[in-house]
Image 1 (spheres, rainbow, N blue to C red):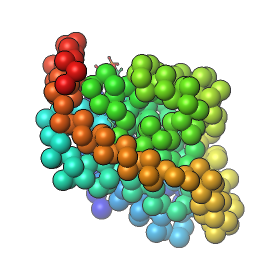
Image 2: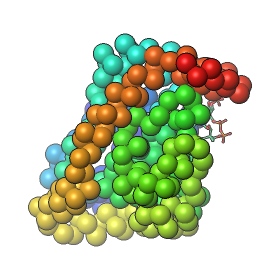
Image 3: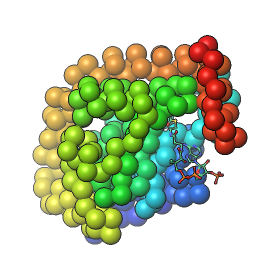
Length: 259
Ligand code: HXC
């Protein structure tokens, strides 16, 4: 399969590396990109030579969120009937081999959620995490309201979701969102080093370790995500979603009417 919005390679013939590649849009995540990412991850998962995957972005952005321009005109009927997010964003959760997120620059909205869907996050010192959806008149829709509190606790998760502020790499490590922070120029070496170490172990054991840790982490996550998705879809019925996204697309300040 040829890919247009991601780059795919192997490292040491054992690590599958996927680089999100919409640099001009700061790797904003659209449906086509998420289809490609899912296909590439599934291909690596099915390849017996591959023991671990690394998902990364550019120096400036892991991913600055779901593509706001693409979402701006969606209606409730569009997102609900089309099963937006559920249809293709969560393929990464079906992947049974370990997946590491190597994050530099912005990991915002859906980008932060994508990083959290990976098994652990290694961050560069310039990484910035956030769930700024509230500024667009919506809420996180790819698990952010469920995975962020599990990672950093309620206080910080509420702060992030309600103010839309960003968290730098130091705060993210202190809070437990990321496992390691390294200088930007060492990010890929660190991530690939961890991945190669994982590849040296039994694939059966690493898959079992991943599955078992997720059992502890994801207790009632499915219900939480389902609940979040229904609310997320419903917000596309509001004027404030149209206003928030139109304001972003047209580079002006949003004026919300609370309806
Ligand atoms: C579409 C985006 C984008 C996005 C950036 N761009 N983020 N396009 N969707 N999420 C585009 C900009 O429009 C711009 O295009 C180009 O990328 C460069 O961005 P700038 O804003 O010029 O860069 P900078 O000034 O450095 O600011 C970086 C930034 C800012 C702070 C990350 O771009 C920003 O706030 N982006 C939006 C972040 C966000 O709200 N994310 C959540 C999205 S909602 P042009 O054509 O002007 O060069 C979401 C919902 C998730 O993720 C729910 C389910 C997944």
